[in-house]
Length: 358
Image 1 (cartoon, rainbow, N blue to C red):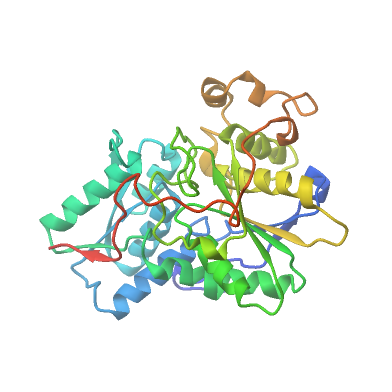
Image 2 (image 1 turned 180 degrees about the horizontal axis):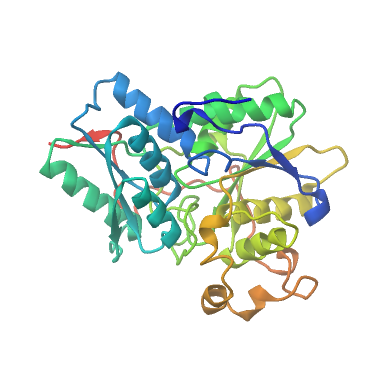
């Protein structure tokens, strides 16, 4: 029996779904949505807040500030409510309505950016808004998940060791790339482990993280319009880019098996399936990380009109038709660390680590 007093102390760390029956590939999906924040972002949110408290940056008069497409905002809303801090989240129009309402229910103030920055997209516009607040009042404390090392350290100390305990013979790990906190924490841990583990990053087409051209991205969570400052490509063996249409196909296919996951999970699983179609072998142990569950995506990923309007009728094709699986679509092939270097951060100014208002 678990008995807790504050919501951020609970997280189910050891739940995996075997996707063999649902998708026909031997891969274990680590489910990170079973906590009171509903996503993997609880870990870095908690670590960043506690580090700021230890450093004396956060005081009772402080106003927590963060830019988020959704899940980090929810996690910080929950922690702020529990600890008695005020919290303001800068998000944009791609954030799911249910996510915005959830943050507000937890007492957060949500500012929605409606116009992208010419150079940095919606992220750049959010960062500009956050910087303006910090300059206006020294009570604002921006944790900056994009540059804060406590983001990846949370996964180095929690997520990766949990996977290692459950799968001592792990061969390949698939991790979605957003801020790259989860990716860098897990990659750093397994590069120091007692046996080699191949680290495959999974990103969205339209993200510039691994040097791709910027493009439209409607699913929150993965992908960046600026190069992630936390990213160290030397720890990544490969990166696979996935079309958002393929992410949605996988989400809806899993839902038909009773597993409701978010869009980022669809992206990670789609990339993993494509990688395994080329590299799978008997005895290979593969794990993918599912950042959250699907309830917050009911009006987007699981809403037929929204999907059809943005991605076309073929994405809704019944399973078994020519467009019902990612195997029949042809998104760009994988980038490999050995053959392509990352670009300079020329798509927008990167944010700084933990800022206080001035």
